[in-house]
Amino acid sequence: MDLKIKAFLDTIAWSEGTSTHLLTKNNGYDVIVSGDEAAGEKGLEIFSIYIDHPFASGRPAKVICTKPKRIASTASGRYQLELKWWEAYKLMLHLNDFSPASQDAVAVRQIQERSAIDDIEKGDISMAIKACSNIWASFPGNDYEQPGGKNLTELVEHYQQFLNATTTT
Image (cartoon, rainbow, N blue to C red; front, side):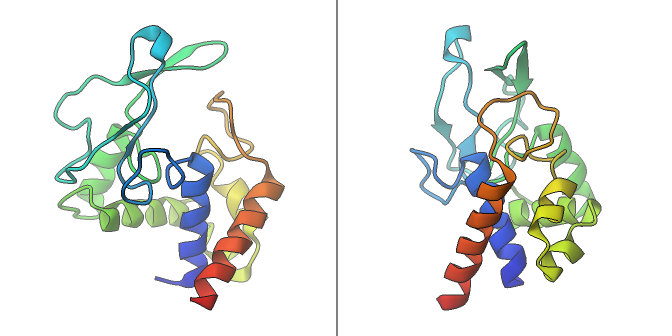
């Protein structure tokens, strides 16, 4: 995988909080969206079987508390992919499982669909982040109404750190 794309994927995972999740054993590929404990949902949670999306077998969505509303979410994996999008991409990309390679393939496809690959290749990470802001709730400029998002400066700085770390190893 291209080093710039890998650094962008690492930036997404850092921004979404999956790669730094307290319980992850697999760099965020195993993280399930945190529920609203006040609503009776479990908080921090991971999964260990990658046969399919963790919610594919009919598990109910988790309730997430946002202001001013609560939302139901099935976001899972390193890039917090909702079940409805997983099912579509699984067919489109002919994926057999929810493995790290499959999760990466979906994220790259989503970046391509936002026409952000060229921005990443040119080094215009701010533009790539803006182009992808409707996909990831932690990116600035989204309309998910979720707290804890990152600002553009933080994201660009972390992208550069990931890129530098990748090119020196």
